[in-house]
Image (cartoon, rainbow, N blue to C red; front, side):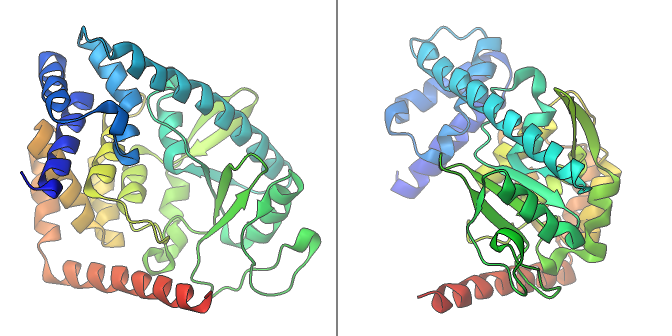
Length: 331
């Protein structure tokens, strides 16, 4: 088996072991062990280890490696507790300054899984603010000890944080601390080419949860899926495996049901039917339970439209071109 095909097969087996029920998960895990080594697992696959432990434990798996996998789960649970404390501090400070926020990315997934906080690792904090509040939000975060890893365009003010030009294509700003942790401040939920009406429906559909004394807002499951599947405006390319793993963490949580009608409407509005269809097809092939059949049929029909394909291709190519231009400009 070619190296590329073997790697893909390993990821598929790990995906099945992490999400299939009962004996099917155990069988997938045993097959994965015959092809792979947990000590040489790639970083992308290792993100599934906490969820793998939870699923194999529920399936009654009796494997010598369960103790080692449990270590990944416990580490993720402990680290996520720290991240939630950071999110609480930052959100509270922004709220006192009059800045509304919505948690995005892995933080938003973690908020769906508060009863099993160790299932999915938070690697950094993703926080959405209103576009007109970016400068104030940046100042607040900077005063908390997070230093900007960028220079905002325009007039610079307190703490060296500048004003954002309205035509700025960038929609994410990075901050770091002395521990090497990162906060990503979003001025739009999607890159500028996708942000119809500034993404107001992501704000209007946001859910709330209580963490200690702070109320955190995060997208509803339909909104989360669209954000997880969309080009993120950074140079990082999310593979189908990464998108599918994130998608399943949203689909399998039990706190909030997904509004499939809303998902279809948003996919049509933001022209994201192609990655949605691709990811759900991947999940369907491996797990057989991604979405209701009528929903899958509508998504496939929308993704097959030539106009949908052209718009998605042009937008993704435009983002890729912008990143190449930026890299040349920083040499």
